[in-house]
Image (tube, rainbow, N blue to C red; front, side, top):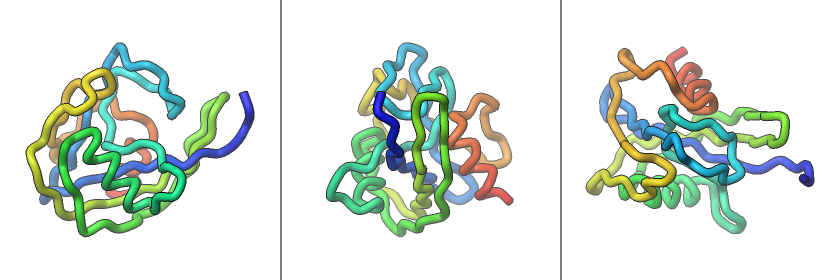
Length: 137
């Protein structure tokens, strides 16, 4: 495998003191990102060529949840590294959303659920966990 860095996007959609997390399917295939299954994740994915990171955030959230997001802010960036892959993850906060929440890619996320920031699930996807922890500091 060629060694190069890719750009990932993680989106924290805020609704008061709640955030949206999706459950990564136990049977999820490896799509080239940081590979962890059977855990909870923020919506997001890979930035595509010729799109801004905000455009990528909007596209990924729409593809995964059917929600439209707005009032976006670049919170920070982080390195997410596994032995065979390296991502720079752009952490984006969305303070406004609209639409009907749906499971759009059931082979990837089999559930979407709002969680209170004071009562999060234990098993959180590592890049999402780091983002949430940094946000709460």
